[in-house]
Image 1: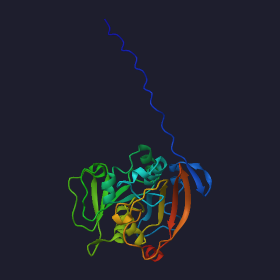
Image 2 (image 1 turned 180 degrees about the vertical axis):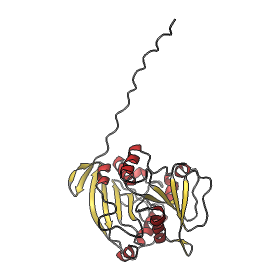
Image 3 (image 1 turned 135 degrees about the horizontal axis):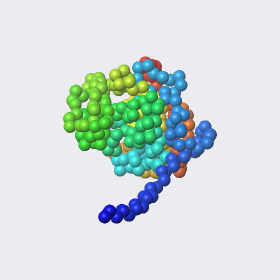
Image 4 (image 1 turned 30 degrees about the horizontal axis):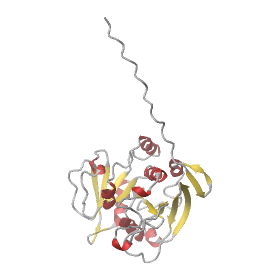
Length: 285
């Protein structure tokens, strides 16, 4: 006697994939576009600005209208969906991502590119599936259970003046050791990233102290700034209300040139060329 046929399994209704967010082009004017379309159209490095001895550096930050880079120690609450899609699309177009150790700890960084379609797009661009994760750390105070360091498939370079090494991590970790009188020599470190790790384009995601050091040294070529439609208040003097740049004043304000402006749900997305400290840039080109 044959066994009864099993009852038919009802099909599972899966929600349709969500359409990407659309950005309104304010400057220059044009048709609405997705983050992927916008980044595909960007030349990195910009035409005529390729550098011979260091990576082309793009700084990507989000801030409230009154300049706060974090709320309750995190930047994620300032971002909308469009900003997050642009954040990941930029990661999909560079050789490496540079982040300070404090930001790695506060934001609990994981693998740089999780989306399979974006990894495929990177390969189509002639890049590796994952950008090289470059962590700037003076004391190597990086918990081994940080998701990025606990991921065995991640490639990480620790940029440090220290001779110490991490232990207990699963990621593949190399070191760029660049010290000048006990402090990190950023120009030398970036030159080493290009020479030894083939990093020609580098996306920096902060934090504010690292941003300040890069800008003061003339090592930033572009700034992507997402303005969140919010006011957070707070007193910078306490150290709890960080802006996108923290630390000592620059000798002179750094000049920027607006390249494009976008909008989505009252968030404004600005792209600038950094035109300041040409002498320092010329010494490294």
